[in-house]
Amino acid sequence: MGYKSPSSPSHVGQDTILSYAHPDDRVGQDGILSCGCPDDRGGQDTILSYGCSSDRVGQDGILSYGCSGDRVGQDAILSYNCAAHADLWRSVQRSALYLLHLAVLLAILITVSACTGQQSPEAATPARFLALGDSYTIGESVPAAERWPVQLAGLLRERGLPVDPPQIIARTGWTTSDLESALDQAELTPPYDLVTLLIGVNDQYRGWSADRYRDGFASLLGRAINLAGGDPQRVIVLSIPDYSVTPFGQRRDPQAIRGEIDRFNEINLELTQEAGTRYVDVTPASREATGDPSLLAPDGLHPSGKMYAQWAQSTLPTALAALGAETP
Image 1 (tube, helix red, strand yellow):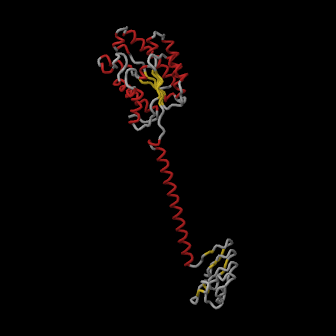
Image 2: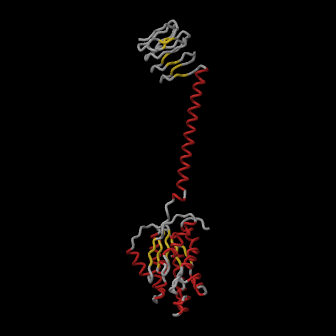
Image 3: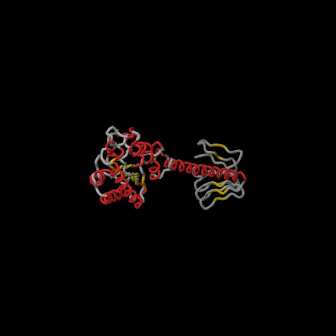
């Protein structure tokens, strides 16, 4: 099919790949090069071998260019032993090493980017907050936005912590028994990241004994811990406010009210410490309403949004600790 030119030692391997180097080389009618050494010849498919004296083809037909020490290994891949061939091989090696280093660097950058994204506050799952209690937790006589759990959630967000709106299970007039029954009926999805418990003023108001309050509070505290995934450090107990300083309390027996609330608070503090949960004392702040009517709601009994803001601020460091964040 193609032009054949003779060359002394040149020859074609099994797949007729040419080995060549001669100034008289030229291309035949079919565009396949024939090399002008006297004894050159073409294979069956007219691909010529280019005529250096020691050129040869390996078992798979890969050409070995005939510098004195060149050879083909068992896999017919050329081993370059002349200077030009070695330089070419080193260049290929450097290129491959560069690409390997580039791939490693890219993998590191992707890993670092992924880790950074996982630590980003924007990508973090919002904390789930459950607030349990009575009229003080539901915010009797104040707008929903002024309830102390809602204000606390806002303060946490201001510190960069994503927090869902609090789920509040509370109602005006509830005792420990009422809250227990409400929990039995509530649609809960534990574990919660933060659980607060403020209960007991209506137990005192109804004249229940300290022992009865102890039993009721102990049961609720255990449930609160379970709702926090069994982690007592994610539960915060707030003390019972003192309503003896309010106009409503002043019309009754302020001294008796104060003494009984103090006794109930001793009980809930003791049980809190035994369980390893956290505690925030808001009772002193509630007593400031004596000289500051703005701390009371229009009903003359419950706290105003201003007092609830104080409770939220007082609870903030403890809530941050419960959520594993640094305190301000």
